[in-house]
Amino acid sequence: MKLKEKYSKEILPALQKDLGIKNVNAVPKITKVIVNAGLGSAYTSGIKDFTEFAENFKAITGQSPIIRKSKKAISNFKLREGLPNGVMVTLRGAKMYDFLDKLINIVFPRIRDFRGISKKSFDGRGNYSVGIKEHTVFPEINPDDLNKIHGLQICVNTNAGNDKDALALLTALGFPFKKK
Image (cartoon, rainbow, N blue to C red):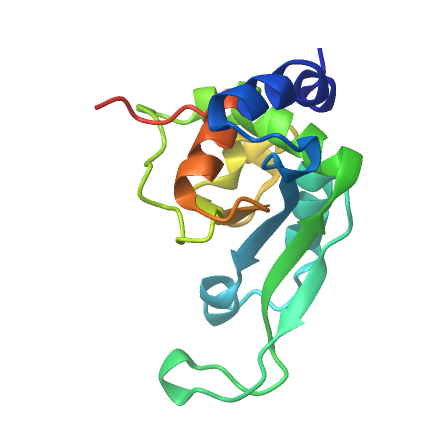
């Protein structure tokens, strides 16, 4: 069963009952997922062409990324104004649920020495952030064809007003949080 169907048929009624919410529309749900990677270390190591990063992001997320450029120069980071320093993708709708399904069921189990994700990464408003050190854990990436391995930051935005409701939502979706 796909994650979106599972959410609408099983998780939504259970969350409504557990959280004591009368209106179905007030039950927490995921609004968007932002996948981001910084390219600063790649730029300082001499890589000038970021098409490989963009193609990797497209393979991982199923959507073309935006190459972010620096807004101001910072000499300590060897950063000049207008230079590319990151790629990002904002996922919504069906692609978002497909990405989360892949993240929960395929990527997290493939991470070496994985014992669960931390419950401390909530921001106080119900949004959750997680970082992945190597993007090679995604099944679409062939490690033999890469020039440089980079990390990813994934931010899951929810419409839950607090961290407790967001934790209940993400736990019900199957996020593997650390046990105490």
